[in-house]
Image (cartoon, rainbow, N blue to C red; front, side):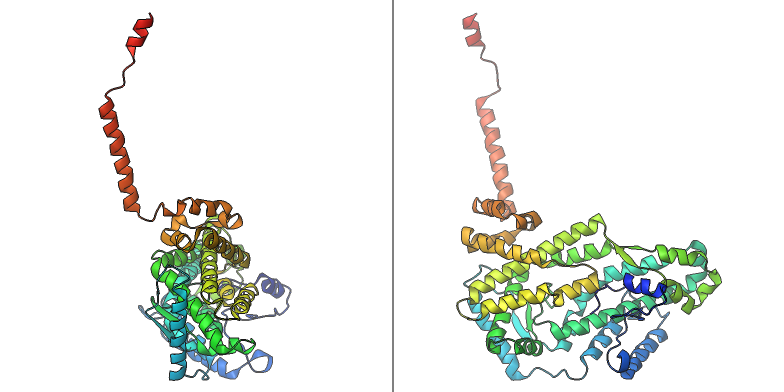
Length: 471
């Protein structure tokens, strides 16, 4: 997967083009991110034919309002390209495998009951193929990717001079659909690669699947298990426990799903880009040339779309990193407590997943490619340590009670120095928002009691008797 979010370019590649050299690496000479694997020098005639077919379908629908490709991302193209990457080797899940997944989930839920106060969050656990994962998670990807694409596509036309906009007006719709195809093709590549790697529906820390449905991907789990020494049945139970723990958290902390997805959306909406190269290229362009689609693409190709970090983005990134770290850290602690004594290889499996994330696993690749942000594994370790200390010092109920309200969660500074946060929980700080109505009633009762005391005491008057006696 490319390390650049869709719509962004690789500055090293741009510099190479200016020197007359051919850039290397994924996406080279490939401004729309079309797949290039296979064949001599990366050329695959079959994929070329598939792409030309997709391009023809997109062009035939241009200008038709209300079409599926009229949004900022062409999700039809994204889905087709993702499925094409998987090929025809995706086989349906057998009844035996489905039963094994259901049994593993049932066992994991029983073990988790003793490790957390949150009840089961999944009404059922299913076995997905890679194609199922693409289909079932696409609606969430739309919510995550649209803000990025809208920002970028709007900036493309906004940066054109007024005179150029007038002449380019007939082309604006086509330009938007070309951008939708570009974004859709890169999203399709990312989803196709992710579908081969993800192990569960919450593997990257986001609630991607339908609410209340836990999902494991047996084919990916088998490949993941191939290089490990533990039995695949134990690995399946361990991953089922992680999925069930995520589902408990997202299912019984009603504000959490919105907080996570909202933080990604806030980050995406704050994207600003440097269009100086595009503006410089557009200054000397003949406006009449903008009626030619190839000329428009040539102008856009000269722009170096570099994301500029804004203060709002930094805040959104901080919130997202901290929240994802808290989720992952809590799941890690709860699952360890639930299966640690029952699965001898649980510690090794947890370490394998930590290394997978630290070296750029599916979660890190997804955020870097589709949203343009990078997550720091260090926060995950700090969050796990905080939850572990909180469990030991305050107990399971106090630990889980922290999820009662977003204002009770530790922030980034608490992860760096958790002692004061843990002290506040032990001292009762985590109950302040457990019942806001009860808190309001308590405040009103206190105010009424104070008012009653004031009435009983009467108005405050100076004690003149003592003064008179002394005079």
